[in-house]
Image (cartoon, rainbow, N blue to C red; front, side):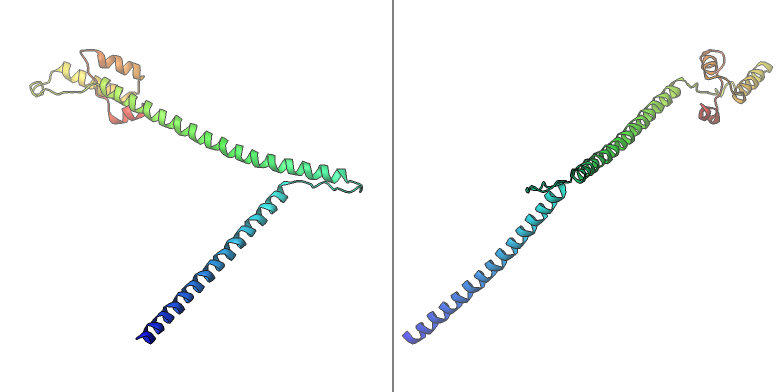
Length: 180
């Protein structure tokens, strides 16, 4: 019986060693990958910092080429200014687009208000069935006058004035409304 328990304990010990070995190998792989990623990140940062700096001054007593240094500094300043100018131009275009859309929205609102006012002011023609029976010369004449008003393109103020007169109510066609 002790022999069987010994074999079971030995098997469990070997299994535990294999699990520990596999986890340590996985930890080593993860650590290697993280150090490589960190090194790549540091190298990229150094490269970006190196690209930002226009010139590194020499430490020795050698002759310094001041013209080359000034040219590189001037080029760096101009490149930075171009980047800000591009961003400024992009923001300026965005602002112009937004102001134009705001103007369009305001114009739409104004058109809607004017249409509401037009609906309030526009005279509605109600034909009474009792008057439709017989027409006299006078009623034919007023009907022809109303038709004449519709065909003429008169000023909107004149149309409003004639609309407010109690005796005549001109009919305004859809084409006439669309023109104004």
